[in-house]
Length: 223
Image (cartoon, rainbow, N blue to C red; front, top):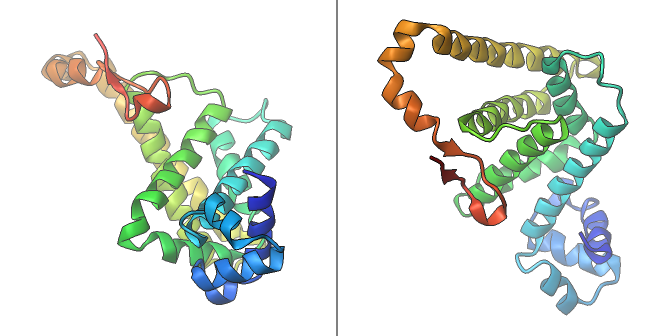
């Protein structure tokens, strides 16, 4: 993100809780930041929508910084995932800014942007924690974590418990559900009868490969 966009974004955060991520906020932020409107439009063609995306990605970067500084070595892997989601929420200073963002990305014309941001956050968590999967697991890990992350954010937005203790307990329960699913998958693969019965579908799924680069989305079909 350019320094100019950072400057406009910082100015926008003063307006978003009151006016949302809309044109009024964008124009006010550009004026407050002292940036020429033509330059601002060039950097953010969609106005406040681009600022909302930049805000989300700033949070992702802050989360990664916390993960890289944390001592995760003694944690179980499920606890590392929980820590990553928690760090992502803890870098947010104003829940109203996120609430306004969810309203923006709930609109049909921006829903794809919102879904992509959640997917990218979860992909970043897995990659930062060292995930090297290259098969169907690459997709299932990110898909299940996207569900965990999304539901936790919704819970957190309405949580008034001390230190958001209720949110962290909710997060632990959701991750426990994911762990049960992973255990179930492993048992299916270990069961000879089920493996023979599902050989065709499993062989087909086994050919799905993770994206190699940005121009390989959503992935490819291996041999």
